[in-house]
Length: 362
Image 1: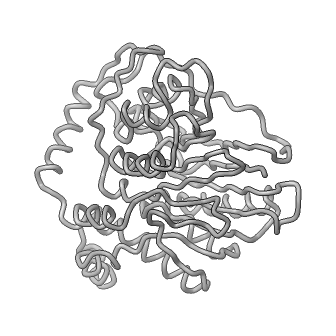
Image 2: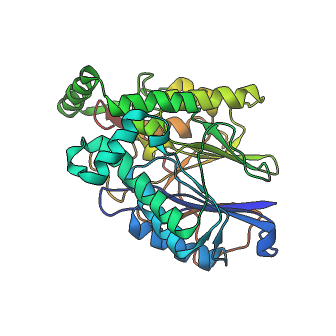
């Protein structure tokens, strides 16, 4: 069996997101011997591009599975277009109002007066409620992407979050700690004031262990596709604790660092979502000169503050044998045992940067 993975560009300028299409199976045979999956849909324009891409390159109007990793607008909005314009057989998405009384109350407030909700809470609900309405209108069944969800053929499964961890994260979204919010604001100010550069090489790494991302990002569904023993990992915007829990699951199954053939760099290459210890467990130790696999990061065309991606992050992947390829306004294609495509050329991965941002960037 073969596979192909497509990361389509999302957003304009310095805004970005995720819009991923993939298929696996006998890619030289009939559609009945293939499975098509969409993971996130970017903004509406990216959703339209996904529809066109699937029709043109996968030669089908049928999507076996659509996955919403989490409800950020740059991930979920375009899925509405996919559900409306293609024949989607199943949708994976979290329904936060089913797991939190606070979210259920907020959903009612959203229906009456969206502006009455705090911005993060409103954003956490709006995309999900909109997508649920479209799915119901189109007759698309919805299931939730919690640990141990597995496709009928066993090839695609969810490694996290667990339902219990998801509830913990929802509590943080509903009632964020004021101390943590104040700390984040102060830290962001200090980063801007102290931003500079520092030296790195194949062995010298300045990525920190204390990366923190939002609770909403950590709700991201983390998914693994395995095709003929080749493991392909999709991480959404998951951060260190969420990735750590997913690795616990993989390691219990005998997973060895460096056995991935493909990995999505979390949260568009943010340095806040990974740490050296997590990457050691996932990819292997630093100092690796042999290419072990390939990494993709969906990033905006412009990156003025070294946020998406951070050079510390792309360096960390490269020094562990996973060079990172960036979208930056163009589609990226990774494949195995798949038909050739006209108009596609070899992608050039990010180099190992000797000078990286220090304190600046998120």
